[in-house]
Length: 483
Ligand code: FAD
Image (cartoon, rainbow, N blue to C red; front, side):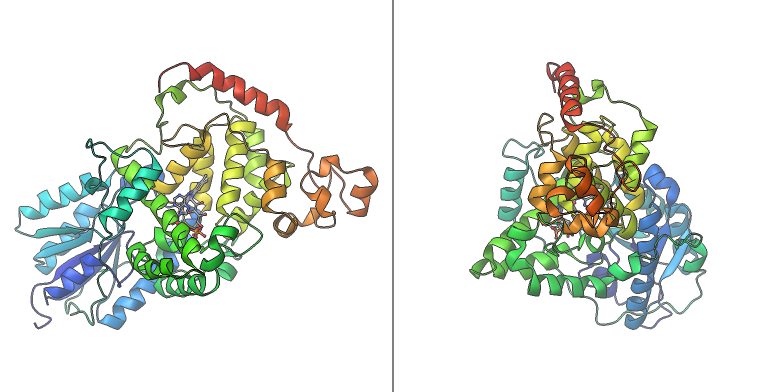
């Protein structure tokens, strides 16, 4: 078909890739000119509009998507404002006959998709909604009694038995739209920090975009998947994939990864690691399943009894936690890794989460909000489900009374203290035996390590033993009420 034919619009969201993008593939199949569109609609997301770190990622991700689309023959259009108004305006001005999109799962997505359908339907413009972001649709999977899964293990079994969506290839080419459509300039959106440029460290670690994601996945399969089961809990080793920001932005398709990893289950060397990796992908699915079916998950406890939990308010303690100045080396290392790179190892996310909600007795929503602003993978489903898991208020959560001992966690998962040395360099001179709990070191050991507690590095802001007891007492107050 010639480019002067009426176009179709592809509305991108967290599916910033051309491979295995069913909405783009269906639009290309029409043979009509394709207008790829990305709308920044911050009002719709409200408090969950992208935080600082994610904006940095999004800038580079949109740039990469724009390049990939251009190679196929279409120009990415960027616009800011109300999604429905912008899509219908472009559709009417260009005479578009259809809009294609991969469906969303955030609490605002169903209303947006319904409104698009209603508004555009009046002009006979069809809206085609496809799957694309997940392995399986959250409304497709139910327990035998028709309920929503609230426990992970049967959910994992159900996903592996149900069969994952078959990925679709990228179109060979796209028919570009010949007319002129106004587009914003990405640089004008101000997604990159300037003064101060706190994202300097991000560039050494990350390569946003589908190519960066593909390379990371290939390197993980070649170098790390065989040992993934053994090493994934070790923040001092490169044992995990670090694909989470690529998955979050939809640059890497989880379905592609699923099918690429499946054959590794049959190889003795890789089978355990491959199975554990697939299980982690399903933890991501489980989070989406919960968010979709319980849209209040980001703001209210899943277990209602936690509404009465006596959380404290303590701005000084919260700030010490955010800045990595709690006096607990493993906690501080994690919080500093987060600040410097926009990411934190999963084991350490659990440790800092337990410390915030149990030792400091501060609400999980405080941690969720800080992570939201600092993580390049900040994901409404995984972040809220995981914070609720850590605090004990979530579905299939860590029991509240299981309170991590940060020193024991540190000794077990950072056995040589290398992770702490990297992120808390003022402790680097301590022997491994002392680095996990410097307050137990003798004066001469501290001197030899060039550490002055309360000066070069903080004294612990709370004691583990007494705050553990305080947390258990707080839990006692709510545990008799019904969940
Ligand atoms: P890998 O170990 O390589 O796992 C592969 C993929 O599986 C990950 O990329 C991720 O997509 C998924 N995955 C792994 N673990 C989990 C999990 N526990 N829950 C859900 N998905 C998982 N993950 C996010 O993507 N965004 C978040 O905002 C987020 N917030 C979190 C907050 C807290 C308090 C905790 C404890 C965990 C959070 N996680 C979040 C989950 C997990 O920590 C990250 O997905 C993981 O650390 C990413 O590293 P990776 O890609 O190397 O993971």
